[in-house]
Amino acid sequence: MNTLRNRVQLIGHLGMNPELKTLESGRKLAKFSLATNDSYTNSNGEKVEETEWHNIIAWNKTAELAESFLEKGKEVAIEGKLTTRSWDDDKGQKRYITEIVCNEILFLGKKD
Image 1 (tube, rainbow, N blue to C red):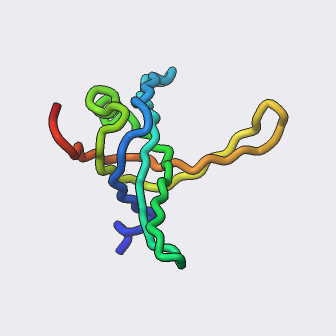
Image 2 (cartoon, rainbow, N blue to C red):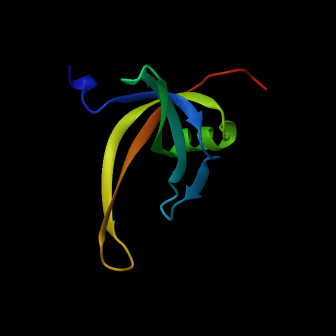
Image 3 (cartoon, rainbow, N blue to C red):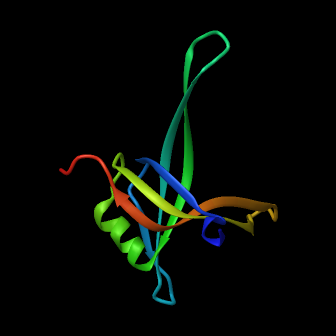
């Protein structure tokens, strides 16, 4: 059951091309956003569609794969874990962001 702890699986479309950075340590970091869609019928019988945006980060080989093969609009499945980090902004206020650290990417949709 331990393998189920803090595990996230999503299928969605990329909202932007991955941004790859090489850190001073030599580690590579890719950042991109993923949109997932959900729909339901409201109390008036109308179909409502909602889009949820997720911040995704990937490290090293996974980051290189993301940069090489992913682009805005592509459909992918990702697996990873949720993380939350904080920092102080320019005004000294504490800011938080929740991200998914991606450890697997499955390319979906049609090949170009």
